[in-house]
Length: 568
Image 1 (spheres, rainbow, N blue to C red):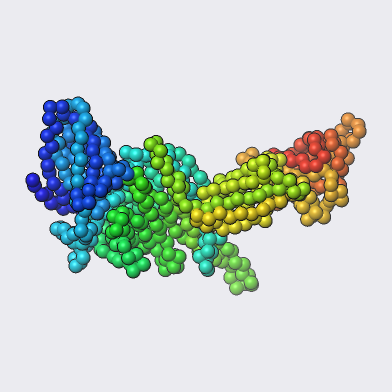
Image 2 (image 1 turned 90 degrees about the vertical axis):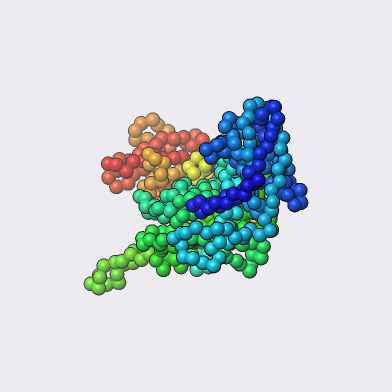
């Protein structure tokens, strides 16, 4: 039995080499259970790696909730390593294999402390008294990070990911508004950094593009990268608010001017022997931006089946608005542009993860329940609702009940997708606004507004409607790309009894579109006669007018989209 110890580019490898005789039938697959050598309890989330004689990795896997594993040895397999955060790594030598399956239960020893001293090699970082402990903690952190990577390779799950953007109030840091996108797919990873660790070590955590700057955060692959580790210095850190956790703090060894970098802490739970989260801040900004506390967080969660996943992540980034301030006196100088800085968060959360063998994990998120009724008090069956700027939707059942689950914490407003108005991308607002809270249900009652309510309110606001229970026409003027066109004058002409070109009567009504491209024609323009033929003329400046012929098909609400080109 030989104990091996070596330090190579920030990675400490400690193990026990041991020969395993398989008898006559050499195995292609090795299976068994990994246990704690002291308690004999199964060890979940232990990584197994098979190497050939040259040290090349042939296969990787991870133990499940019972500590069980099965790994292919393949041709040329010579050694298998077992490692898990909080345990000493163990190496097992294997003989040449042929066919079949062999059984092998293995024990690994829990560390009495994850800060066992290690041999320290020369580095670019200044010598610290806790350097040996920091490198020992780094080795344990790498074991935990590796488990997240091997778990997604060996046991990928189907995931529901919630990706969001939050805009913060500049004074109180309260979330002013947010948008949420739902992504459901079979995925190898819930979060990834988009670039390799070596790129971050060389160029920092931002890149310039046409839209400004793109910011990145570290993922497990980045923190495992040898080039990244070589470019950073590590130290041990504690926090009274985290009594069971210990932090591995990291900072760039060589700060470079005009480069955005990060420093942060990877927190490890010494009782659960598990990664908890990475908290980091961006460094290299000026004082004004630095006051917004730009940075991020990546959180880990160990599943019951042994998989370790990133379940939450966010980047807190600077953003800016610009105002042009006119000069009070042109003689004193020109107008100037003032910049307003604020913070916004871009991030995501794992809502659901499920595996082929039946294991499922669900995040503790919020829920909305709505009881929807008509003006007459009957269940508003089939009403389709959505939360503003999100992909959260719900439809009323036969009793008028609507339920929207998996709500990220934050502010929301409920809107109604009215089928007729949806054709011109108009939704109906409701009085329902709320802030979702984790693991909590919000219940509301709603009297559902109609499309007629919407049109009537627009006409009443403009004081144009004389027959409040008559025919309304609501439309949107759009360009070739479907974008709203402002400042377009829309006039209506009514078809008289004859068929001649002069038999169109001016409806004595017109509307000029705003930035949303919307217009409405109210009852006095054409009365409430179903089947009435009208001509809409949309014009603006020297642009070629658009003429649209249509027939009133409803005696209540009619909706139309008017194409318009601003070209002469």
